Amino acid sequence: MSDKISKEVLTEWLEIVRPFAHDGHVADYIPALAKKHPEDLAVAIHYHDGTTVSEGRDEDCFTLQSISKVIALALALMDNGEDYVFERVGMEPSGDPFHSIYRLEQHNPSKPLNPMINAGALAVTNMIHGVTPDEKVGRLLSFIHEMTDDHSIRHSEEVASSEFETAFLNRALLYYMKQHQVVDGSVEETLDAYTKQCAIEVNVKQLARIGALFANEGRDLDSNRQIISKHFARICKTFMVTCGMYDASGAFAIKVGIPAKSGVSGAVVGSLNKFGGIAVYGPALDEKGNSVVGLKLLEMMSNRYDLSIF
Ligand code: GLN
Image 1 (cartoon, rainbow, N blue to C red):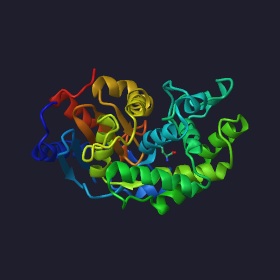
Image 2: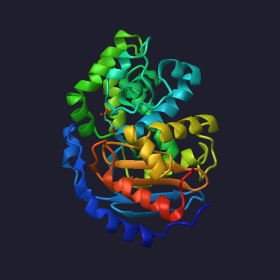
Image 3: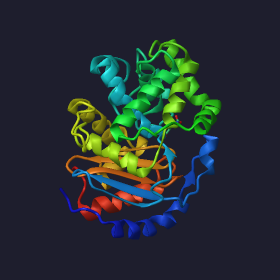
Image 4: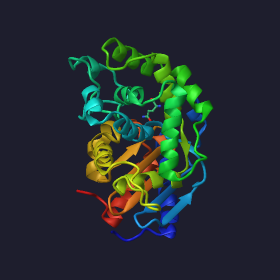
């Protein structure tokens, strides 16, 4: 394992990256996210040996947004098996923005390219077992409670309904996929489950622990329980490398080289075998939807501590 990064180093680095918070913009297409302050930064590391370090606003909660796509994928794989999931959703990076619709029409029969873009993630949520949206989200929350050993984690109704009321593009993706039998059941109910899934709130310490669990091949670091199979954890981490940072995944792999997933709330989770989980939060986003501060901080960590997997 590489050297541990001390709290003092994290404090210093947060101050170095703070000015970059003003190079980006807080997401406002989900109205409730627009209230966030660009300089509310936080970082946490959950090391492979179970120890943790964190700095900044490490108790503040933010919503998972697209980071939930990795967790939902793990649950959908456990619910349905690999063959079922990948008959309906592909494994290839798209190189397009996360909410893009146009590739759906290029594949015959229609199939979203991967589970990390919105089309694929909506199809994955549709596959999670549960009769009602609340049952699906309840199962996803229980899964997150198991991963974090924290049963207080909930979704924000304010953020979920703010997105539900304005998610016209995601509705369009779902209606297109319903027409082509990629998803079944009610579009509104799948969207309800998806927006609640995206609105699940965590802090950086909880998120770093989730990253550490994926890094530890799906086993909880405290109890040693296998919560996700090694194989499914590996599938999720591979998607983090190829598609986790949207259409900036290639540059991120070169500059940082850490399997990672970002969300438009401004959070990024990284997962490094034999090192642990890293979570960074900074709500200002670049034009691709990735946290400006998150990218900067992960690049600094990777370069200074030689964290790239490549
Ligand atoms: N809930 C958001 C959406 O579907 C998640 C997108 C993201 O984090 N990139 O638009």
